[in-house]
Image 1: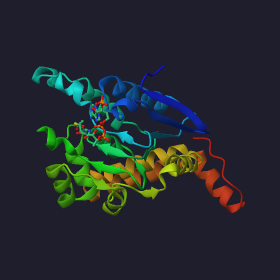
Image 2 (image 1 turned 60 degrees about the vertical axis):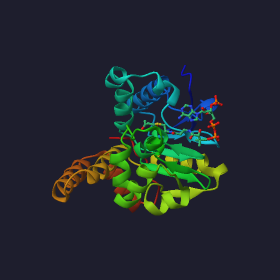
Image 3 (image 1 turned 120 degrees about the vertical axis):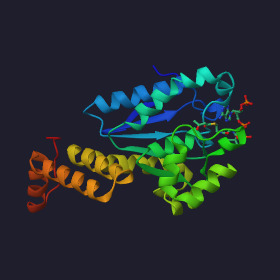
Length: 257
Ligand code: CAA
């Protein structure tokens, strides 16, 4: 049983993971990150799970790395930091990951948001990389993913000043896909998760892979990968079912084959 996570399956095919460390605004200590990496590994292996939604509470999605734990680490501790491997496992999750964000998403919390594929934010959410105030820089992908998400001027402003931005600003900038009332954030994320869970699993997986490739490759390579994935899907039973269902004017029933 995880200590810092609540794991539920309120919708068919969708697992809901709630960060549960409210006394520290869901600060991401090593144990929490290890539990999260393990949960995502298990969801990746489970054919009954199509999508994972991750959330926090109304005050905080996550207020960053655990600063108390950081204070105990010296240079050697940082060089051998087990959290690096946990972050790599979290970022490698191959099914769609939806973040439902209320309150603070700061430092590692904002970096966790950027590992997600779809981000639903409550109107009161705040996104920021305040590490500069601690004399450090983001260490879980923040400089790289933030610049790719929001572009250079805003990424520079956020990382160099440490100041956070609102949910609306984050949406305009491309960090957030949808803004909702805070009390509906998780419900909306679950709705989107359930809609994706009804699609053809192989197409969903290859669509995510192709879209992520667009962020870190040249256009010609990305187009080749898309064509390759598109061709692979031509041989699937789900493609035949999708086309047949359209022609027969009925919902498709995909089997992941
Ligand atoms: N680590 C450890 N504990 C934290 C924490 C963190 N990142 N953020 C908040 N807490 C703790 C506080 O110490 C406090 O605990 P106590 O009651 O025991 O003192 C509790 O959570 C509540 O926090 P506050 O009293 O500070 O709440 P607030 O509403 O006054 O302020 C806040 C909220 C502005 C988010 C403030 O807590 C804050 O600035 N937190 C730190 C944010 C930050 O700097 N994050 C970056 C961390 S570094 C990082 O993430 C590196 C990386 O790239 C991976």
